[in-house]
Amino acid sequence: MPLSFPYGTAMQILEVEISTEYIALNDLLKICGVVDSGGAGKALVASGVVSVDGRQELRKTNKIRPGQQVQVGEVTINVVAAPEAGA
Image (cartoon, rainbow, N blue to C red; front, side, top):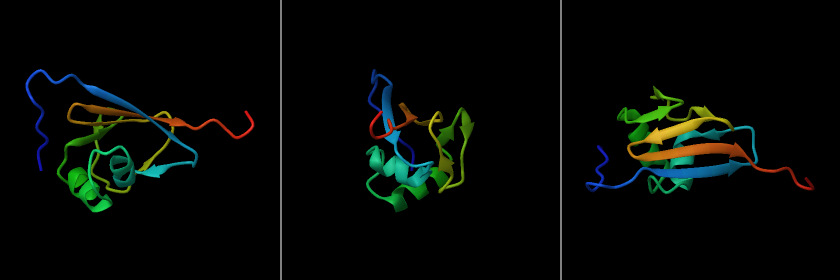
């Protein structure tokens, strides 16, 4: 399932805060709106177009932690830790 972007489309950079130790890669793609469902996220990862920290990632439920960067086509997702309550 190749992604297509209109000519001249600028790279989109998203920042996602997570309050847990990690998030599954397919779930991250879903909450960012890259795909409509976790199943579609798994299919996208399996197609080989997703990279984590610059390396192709084929593990659909790979644990993505704060400080990691995910890229799908022209979309870059930076994962950061949510501020702790009371901080």
